[in-house]
Length: 169
Image 1 (cartoon, helix red, strand yellow):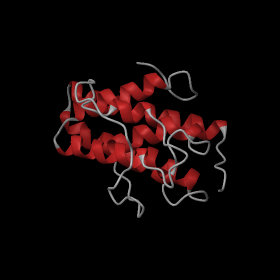
Image 2 (cartoon, rainbow, N blue to C red):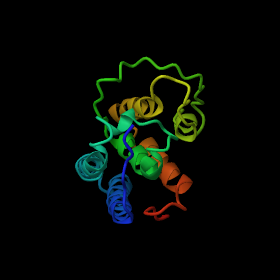
Image 3 (spheres, helix red, strand yellow):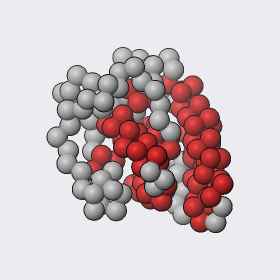
Image 4 (cartoon, rainbow, N blue to C red):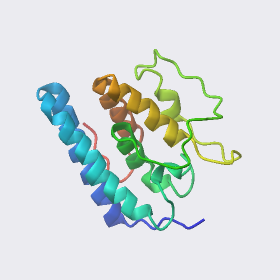
């Protein structure tokens, strides 16, 4: 496996992009619903594009990385924010997952929290949590539940708040 080389400058850029996308989504839900598409574009074409550029020599898609794995570690907080707002294609995502995690629809995030807290099992042949999270988030977005998506992104940002590039509300 090829290591992912991420500099402090890269992390700072990711942090700024994530902050701006988050602020846009928050404003959209607070008072300006037309900004939801702008927030989606920021997560897709700004944050997502930079994540792809940083990882292209190491993996075909950021969602093929193992959540909790060494290669994903410096980028995990940004990958999670991105995939909560944007579904990334992967030829390895066939929709079949072997996870034994049980989601709780009453966790405040309609069952997402258990997946956001867990790491991929290194004993499994392939990674699946990033794929599972993005598919569940896509279902929520399709149902118009951007309020839950915002809460999930807020949860990720708070969980990783001590890491470089994430600022608290």
